[in-house]
Length: 204
Length: 204
Image (cartoon, rainbow over all chains, first blue to last red; front, side, top):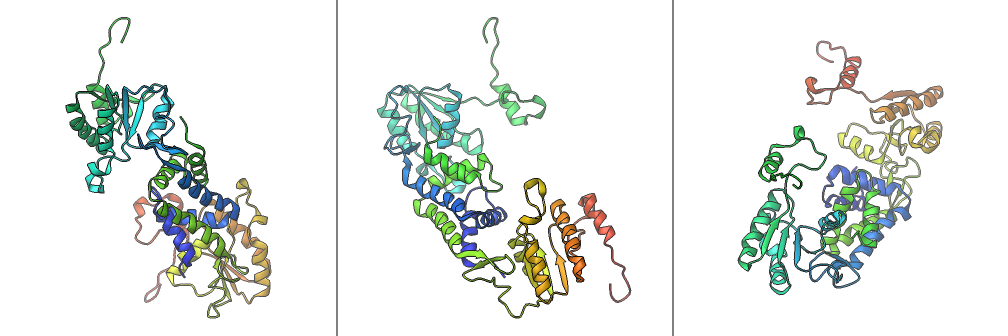
């Protein structure tokens, strides 16, 4: 006995989601079959609803609900001279939570990873160049992830942006606040040493 | 900035699935928003379809598609004198894969765990008793998981079934085939010692 067609289809569809392996897909499928129908349909409805209502901002490619431009781009109080480049929309939410940044964003929708078929063409780099050319941008802050793909993307962006004569910066790598030197990996600790700041009396 | 209403709803619904924490829910939600609409709707459709077509077998509570009784119960070649009791339908698929069992099943739809609100009433024990009384059952094989809840369920079932004068057995615990003594936990190794078999010449 194997699973019936519609159960197998459900397992297959769930297994295509990121981070959900065959075993989890099976577990989630059986969970959905076990719970009341209305509960399970809430999930199905939320997928349909989100796909209908959410699109990408035509300017920065952040998620946008019910409009052409996202909440950040359509907010006139945001400074246009600072542009923060991120890999995905969820990174914007993380940065917004810090309340440290009042500029605008640009979402690349991925990171440079030729092995996964993600090259320059797949990222929103051309659109970034156009924005930097047209908008009043002084500084581009590259906030891609501090991993292999994110660093490769950062190097790539520097190569494209530097000739345009604007300031290009990269967010700092180092020990997380509250972290412990003892448990830091050598790469992070190396970065923390590299990026050390001179301390002076009164200010640092 | 936080997520818009329909994105948050999608994240919330995904976060209710077993084994999917808030971070994974977010990742899956953004994945669904990024992929083509038709791809995302396939998942929604497969949930709706499965909930419409799949129900529980009226006899053994296994999953059943398009009928009152499941494929095992409606197969006249299956022996009715052996009844294998499992926690969930996916356990049936695992046992069927061994091709070692030709009897029928009974799905409890869970394991005894009062702390999670799962008592005797929540499990299909009453229905099991009725089946043992009405059907021509010689032996009940208890194949609940070899963990705390599964063992508690097994003890409970023995208490209910023994007075009915049938043979009640429990699947063996021990080292997995291909396993390594060195890496076995002490409970498993203890069980393996407990359940040792006498070897004789010619047969074991």
